[in-house]
Length: 470
Image 1 (cartoon, one colour):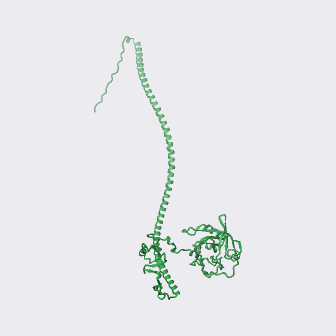
Image 2 (cartoon, helix red, strand yellow):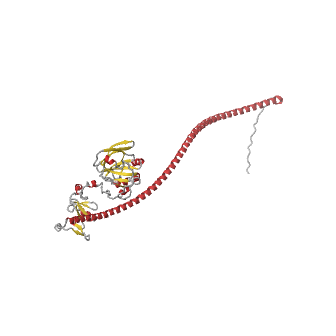
Image 3 (cartoon, helix red, strand yellow):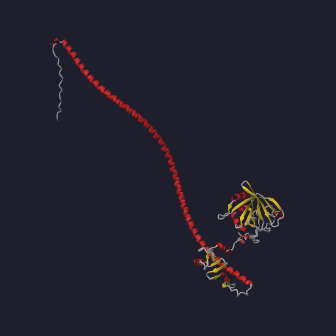
């Protein structure tokens, strides 16, 4: 299932906003375009545009893996913007397309990079009239009796069963088959989207003005370690590259100016060594005088073997170096995991204690509210008792004043009674004397013998009684 006519180039002609969604018109261009036709598409087709080239197609498929089962066909198209491409996605239903728009639009591809996923609905497609009949997203042709097979797994390709993927060179595969293809190129024609990026990668020597010795900051006679990338100066400046070799035992170093590799163990340049074709041993490359008679093929073989040996040695040293780094990182990760577990346990304990303290605080707040209500009631009772006490005090003062006035009146009455008793006693004595006088007069008048006599009164003597002693 391929129409290999070279990669199509597309750009979004117009973009309009309808409600919460962006809609655009997609214009497709080919190398031999004659006439253009405009075709409307279904609402289950969306476009993820402006995807940077450093995000490979397998990486993009991994990014949208959660919705892969909802997509029936991916179509990769080159964007007119430099170093970018877009992917047309045909979903099995319009609701799945709407869910993809909501979940992935303006979403970061990675937390380490600023690029965001841009999703837009396709309103219509402007395409060459000769290609419109073969473009899979426009027409719904009758299914053939024999389905095309995937070039990778050789199984039939049916988009109703398994999602399909059409890449830039217009070859189509199962999506999961291409995601497992390691080098990112087309399994059929070996087309790769990374070619434009590789041609723009600068050489190490082109950046000499930006390089400097890590120790002394010199920018002359610089050497870079092929194992870890450490930059140091040569032995005629500060010999910091050699010091790095003695500290790390990284035996290969590249001279930035000449692009030659020095072997500290053999104390010579690596390009002077080749690998023996017979037994695989390392031998010294003969000088130019002794190799004048060699054929061009032998020279190519020697150069190829030279760089194969260099690459193998470099990769082995890099592997050992990065394995040590990985071991260190694994140990650090283990320590961090242990610390994280302990911190998690401490956080759990602190959380439980906080919950207990919050529960106690709630109980105390509840009790405090109850005590506040009781205090309010007690304050009201106290106010009423104070009022009663004041009224009782006033009544007591009134009673006290009344009692004092009664006591004064009582004293006056007692004095008055004493005077009256004395007066009564005197009057009683006078009445008795008068009575006695009247009685005596009557007796004298009745007895003539007593006429001319004197009447004397005698007081009765008082006798004191002594108490006898026992």
